[in-house]
Image (cartoon, rainbow, N blue to C red; front, top):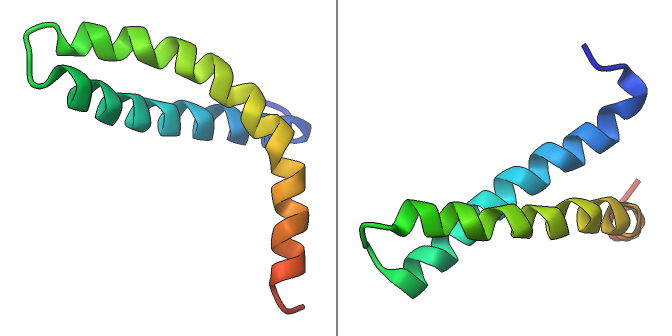
Length: 74
């Protein structure tokens, strides 16, 4: 098991992985259509997408938390 102090990082890692998987899949399908090599194209676009998404989530999350705190009533 992973120590609780890493919960935010693990959350960002998993969230960025799932979101980049979905978005890259939709983008790849729209660009290439339903072709024989679609899965390979998708995976080759997902990997670099995730490499950008994960650090982006870690950088943007604190700002987003502050923004949400300002937008909701206590």
